[in-house]
Length: 180
Image 1 (cartoon, one colour):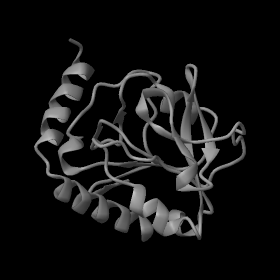
Image 2 (image 1 turned 180 degrees about the horizontal axis):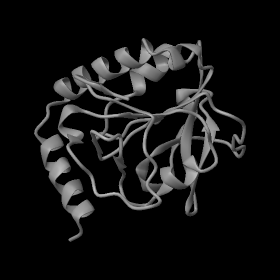
Image 3 (image 1 turned 90 degrees about the vertical axis):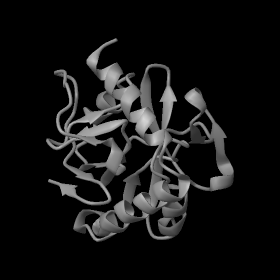
């Protein structure tokens, strides 16, 4: 097992003992801090994620801001991640890896103002460990938008092993600290 796989397993074990209520409370703290950030405040086009059960919950937060901001969600297209605009929660469909994605054929290829990034783990140097497929890292090559990692407390570790293709976050938000 590689060091990254070991970390993924350890973080999954830590997250499994966090209650849904605690995970929601941590998400509320993280997204409240993002709401106070000037980049988020000015952003009109935000790439976020429709959370899976083991990620910081985003559903209510996206619904809260969807009247004021255009939200885009990732869509797995073969070996690539592309994005589509979220027009309606009712228009989501289950895509690859069980991730809810906006329905429709049109991918968005314009500029974004902000990218909210989930991860398995983050470190104090703003490095991100994903699920291992590299979708986000390959996508980041095509965007200059600020990248904000979001993390529960149990997902923040001191130091991650990194590879040359791993992209560092501009900021990482946890319930207790913002890393810049």
